[in-house]
Length: 108
Image (cartoon, rainbow, N blue to C red; front, side):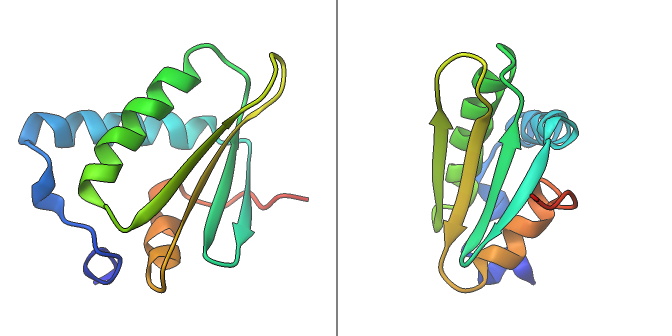
């Protein structure tokens, strides 16, 4: 299973946190503008929307508890620039990350 090979554990979150994590995942998935494949993961681009950054930070906090083997990087530039989330890690993490925020939109 991809979750096991990535070092992720579903039991790390309480039931209410799993519900919140799932809701945030869907909100963020629908906001992704493009996805860039990286050697060990993916970079996700989000619009410069004041509601995105707090949701992204909350999602990362929960996801980090579930998946401590993933490296998380949030890039916040000046106003008007997109927000970038990079998820990378060791072998097996990339396959797991592919299912998290649905990297269907490839970057040009």
